[in-house]
Image 1 (cartoon, rainbow, N blue to C red):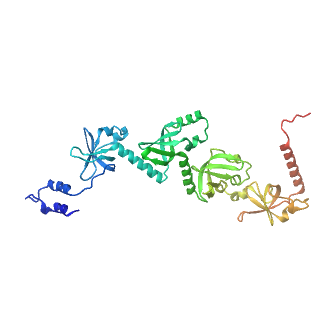
Image 2: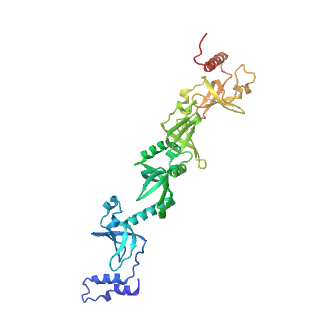
Image 3: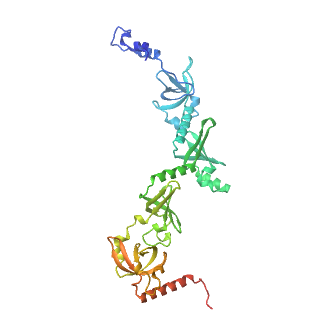
Length: 403
């Protein structure tokens, strides 16, 4: 504050003989002498609406200045904005003309709102925001969206729903049906000088996937919807990113096809096994969130039982066999092969179906000891015949006529 202003603010400079009387001239003189910077033409400022007159609205844009929004400019403002204007509200305005002896500072509310919208679009671009905007129209090239007071354009090639559509009539129908709905997009280009605001639904989809991938971590339990089933497993939608449940991770028990335990549309809980940010892959397990069969093994399996299993792997000391109960048992080398087997160590390989006898169950250590050699010969032969007959029936051609 300069020296002259300080002197004006000092009570010693009051001219009234009655020191206690109010002095309105003092504040007015202070404003006159104190140098308050004036707004510049082309500057966007926020003003406070102080009154409405026949010419339009009057706004306070600074300590010394009032500005006028002419009625012609208000005609360019949307009805929703106009209806919200009240005394005391702050509004963005663009300085059009400085004050003269004939009129106050002239400002534009419509331009102020428009340029503020461009600023918001630039901010959205810089911060890689995902926006949910309304589709208000379309043309041959793509969709037209509403962003604040602006119109943004989403090219045909940046709309996932339209990328694979080659039929023009089909594309027009899809775009027409999207009018009035809202879609997620990202700002990809902002150019106020050319009134160019370009948006991308594809970029928003990719950003959403990236964000979702970064939220997932190994060991996390999540819920998703089954969206596709294939021979080797199932794909689950985890809020924008698809994760794979391999068929071996669907259940503790052996699953021949994923459709045996789940179907498309099912909401299921899964555990994240791994996340590959670079390849954008997520591996899941449904098996990991299901109760372990070891908890009820004494109800489903007993010493002395004969069961059919699948050899899963060979090791130096024997082989592991997957049992129907969903657990693996150990077949020691000394118990490999049936009584008639000439070379027990080479008699089985991963994938083979075997008939075994349960020798021991240790629930605490989660171990089951198995034997092929202790399966009685008559039981071996009966089981072998059943397998042969079953294979023959599977290989028989249907609708074969008898002569």
